Image (cartoon, rainbow, N blue to C red; front, side, top):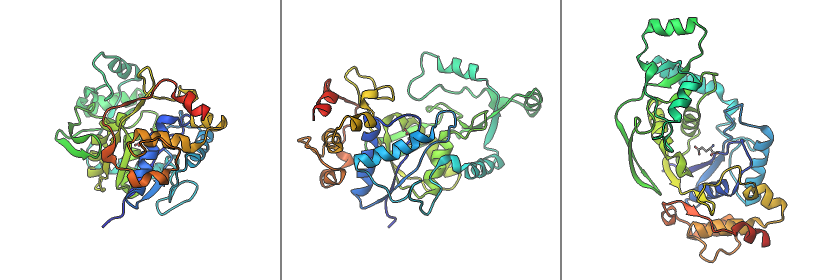
Amino acid sequence: MIRCCGRLAPSPTGLLHLGNAWAFLLAWLAARAQGGRLLLRLEDIDPQRSRPELAAAALEDLRWLGLDWDAGPDLGGPHAPYVQSLRTDLYAAALARLEAQGLTYPCFCSRRELRQLAAAPHVDDRGAPYPGTCRRLSAAQRQALLAQGRHAALRLRCPPESISFVDAVQGPQCFTLADCGGDFALRRSDGVVAYQLAAALDDGLMGVTQVVRGRDILPSTPRQIVLLRLLRLPVPAYAHVPLLLDAAGERLAKRHHSLALRTLRERGVDARLVVGLLGRLAGCNPSGAALRPQDLLADFSLAKLPRADIHLEAGLVDGLLAG
Ligand code: GLU
C-alpha cells in the first residue's frame, strides 16, 4: 500500500492568519493520523504577489504552531526543489506536452475584457466563466494578433465530460469544467504559470496522495484532476474543509491583522491555546484545552468536521490574548 503523503502549501503573499492555521493544522492532522508523511511546498509562483521574507515567516509561524514536515524548502527531499519559483522548467515541459497534444490555445482577451466578465452579477466563488472567445479564432486571426505584438495567455481546451470525486468532508462531487468557469488559463499573458497547473503538477510529481485545503478552493479541484489525468499523473484524495468566518460572517483574510499568527505570537499567546481552540472547532478537543497538535491525533477524524463554514465568536481573539 502507498503510504499517505499530505502537503502544506502556503503562498508567501501575506502573513499567515488563524484561517490558514486552521487549514494547515487539519492537513497535518489528516496525514499524521494515518502515519503519513508531509511535505511543505512554497507556492510563490506569482512574482508580483510573493515576497521572500513572507516565505521565511510562513515556515516560522507553522513551526511555532507545532507543525512539522518531512520534506520542504528548508529540509530538501526526494522531490526538491519545494519552491514553485524554482520549478518553472517542469511547468514549461508539462505545458509543452499539453500543447503538443493540441489541448491548448492562445487567448488574447485583455485584462479589461476579462475584468468585465468578472464584474458580471452572477459570478460566485467559481470565478468568471470564460466564454471561449479565443477558442474560435482561426490560425490567420491568431497570426494577425501576434503580428500586432499582442501577448497571449494559454488556455486549456476543456473536455466536456463531468468530473466526479468523493470529497472526504464535502461528500460526493460532480462538476463539468464549464461549471467551474470553462477553458481556464495555464499560463498568463505575462508568462507566469497559473496556480492550477503548478499545484496539480506538483501534487502529481511530488507523490501527494491527500490534499486538505479550504472549501473556497473546491472549484479548482476538477480542473486539477483533469490536468493530472491529461498528464498521466496519479490523482490524490481531496478534503475541502470549512472556512473560518469572523463575527460579521466574512472569511478570515490577510486584512484581519489581529488574527495573524505573528501578531498572536508577538503578544505572547501560547501556540497551544490556538491549537486547542482549532481542535475544539474540529470536534477533537471538546473542552478547548490548550494542547499541542500531536495531542489532537487520537480523537481527530476528517469525518467529524462540519461541512458548513464556522463563525468565530466575537471576543475570541481577546480571549486568546487574555490567555
Ligand atoms: N497556496 C494556497 C494557499 O496558501 C493553497 C493552494 C492549495 O492548497 O492548493 O491558500
